[in-house]
Amino acid sequence: GAGPVGMSAAIDLIQHGVPVIVLDDDDTVSIGSRGVCYAKRALEIFDRLGIGDAVCGKGVSWDVGRTFFRSSEVYSFNLRPQPDHKRPGMINLQQYYLEEMLVGRCAQAGVEMRWKNKVVAVQGAASGAALEVETPDGRYAIDCDWLVVADGARSPIRHMLGLDVAGRIFTDRFLIADVVMQAEFPAERWFWFDPPFHPNQSVLLHKQADNVWRIDFQLGWDADPEEEKKPDRVVPRIRAMLGAERPFELEWVSVYTFQCRRMHEFRHGRLLFVGDAAHQVSPFGARGANSGVQDADNLAWKLALVIGGQA
Image 1 (cartoon, helix red, strand yellow):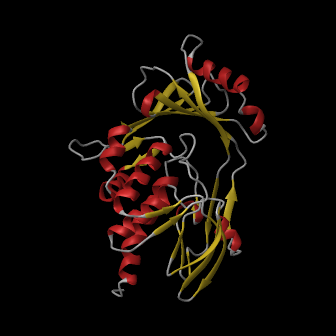
Image 2: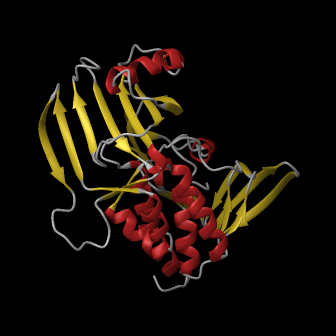
C-alpha cells in the first residue's frame, strides 16, 4: 500500500539498508483532505525520513484548540506552552500533499514503486510470503521474505487470509466539507457542541494549506449519505455557519462513519499489519494517520535488526 503508512515504512526500511518494493493498486495520490493533522511525534518521524521541512513548510501550524458549547468558549488547550520547540504542536496538511512528498522521497531514496499492481492472492509461509499480482500488462508472481501490509481499513489482504478485527462501529455520520475561502479566523482547532448554526450536533473547523478550511458536521445516524453530499444540502449548512456574505467554493465533500476496531495480532508469520489495516480508531484526536506513521517507525528498525541477524 502506497499511503502515508506504507511509504513511511518503505523509506524507513531502505534507510536501514533493507531493499523494498511497494505495490499499490492505484497510480494517484488521495483525493480530498482525508488525514489532516500531523502531531509532533509524527513530525519528528518525518524529519528523520527526510520530509519534515517540506511538510512544515507547506502545512499550517497550530498549537491552540478551543471548544465551544453553543456560543460560549468552555475549554482551550495549548500543545506548545513553552517556546523554542523545533516543531509546532500540530501541522494541518491535506493528505494529497503529504503523499506527493512521500512519493518524491521514495524515488530519491531508491524505493521501487510499482503502481497499478494489485495484490490478488497471498500465501504465507515460515520463510516469507508468496503473492499473485495483477497489472494492466497481466499477472505475475513474486516472493518476499517479509510482507508489510498497509492496505488500509478495508485491507483486502486481511480479508484474503480470513483474519478478522474486533471492536465496534459507531452509529453516527459526519459530513466533511473542504471549503476554499479567505477568512480571518486564527489557525486554531475550533470545536462546537450544539452551536446555534447546527443545533443538537457538533461541528469542527480546521485551517489547511492554500486557504482550504476543513469543516466537519455531525449529521446523526439517520442521515442519507448520498443526499447529504449534494451541494444543495451542503451549501446551506456552511452558509448558516459562516454567514450569507462570505464567498466560498467547495473543493471536496464526503460523508463518513467511524469504527474502533483492531486485529487480535498484528503479526502473522512473516506478514506484519500496520496502520488502518491493523487498527481503526475515531478520527477525533488525530489518531489515524499519526498512529499509522508511528507503527512504521516502531516496526522498521526492529525488522532491520531481525533481517540483519542481530535480533
